Image 1 (spheres, rainbow, N blue to C red):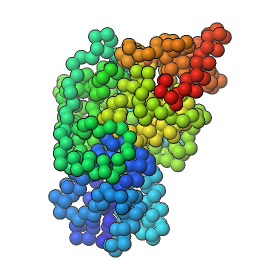
Image 2: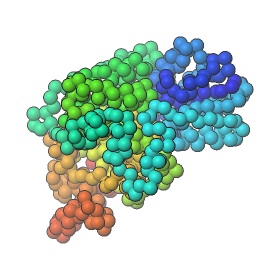
Image 3: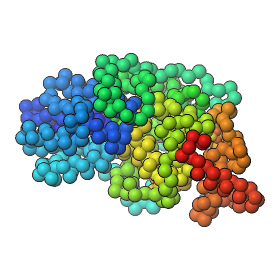
Length: 511
Ligand code: SF4
């Protein structure tokens, strides 16, 4: 073979650079379902079935092109990429291995080491499935004291001419975030159009069976599987979001509600992250809806900011810091991840709600991730790499380049502020304002001590107390230190004692 062209599970891109000069006479495509990718690091049932089903659909598309394909289906025999690759090299004479840049630095290193040990030529191609050109982010980041998403986003908006009007941002402002923080209030959400639900086809059913047999101990549940697993389904999911939920998405993008896992969110991040949808087609669909008067500017801009701004920004930072992520622990947190993250049995209603939908669907929207499950881990002083491994395992859209910086940087502040300008901390009052989780909860969101103390509120003040020396210098958090210092000594003592009690019991079901 001239080129052995590797396609990883998150690279299911029909327009991949890998196929640009593919020659079916001399080249072959190579794909492998390996159990190590579901166990080390771990991956939930939902996430594993999604990746494997999407891979098998992609393999069917490759076969339709009449391109030679070497495919390892899930089996106990080939448990790692390295063993599957070694097996292929023992059967074929290969001149060069080619692949698009993997989405995980660990996989890149593994591949480079393998090729070096086997004296095999390796060519890594740029991933055309992102909007930033290769090197664009590192050039932008060079010589900047602070890397702030807002300026990167503006650069891409201008270069790609998205929501621009004669060189000015559409509507006169770059950012409509202030309009996008509404809660539902007592009346609850307006009618929520149910997102499209793809029936399990034969491929999904077979994957479900294989996973049950070969990987029976994966975390989470699989009551139903309805994620899009091929390009046609992903396009339907995109169209459904743009038509039915984008118009309301902006207003309520930060709101949460009991028993409502989807609300007005797009549910297409997983389709973008396995490359069934290109981010630019998603952005253009939202821009088109706005220009046709089918979605308000705050909704279109808020959504485009997430895809064009945030998504491209975290990818840039992931690669910039690729060597450091496993070491980052700026807040010196070393407690174990509480067991509630694996069973969800807790009296904290916000956590129970947010965890249960992760177990059942592999999904949570950004505020549930940042301000409930992520916030609790931060306040509970969990070792950041433990909560990072949990996010990677449990969410269907989790791929290292996006999940690692979002968790370790944005959510846990483990990078000390490279990605976010401050730790995202809040008490139970924030959750109470943005959801109805607190009604019916065993705890009271405002209470920081006593029997009914909300663990978020107690641990929030403990966080302020513990980090007060540097928070007092922070322009946006110094006021919170003042509030802590204004509390009476007996109040402070009661909060700190309650915090110690929570830390001591957080591995049990009590909290
Ligand atoms: Fe969560 Fe506290 Fe509200 Fe209970 S009271 S739902 S623990 S924020």
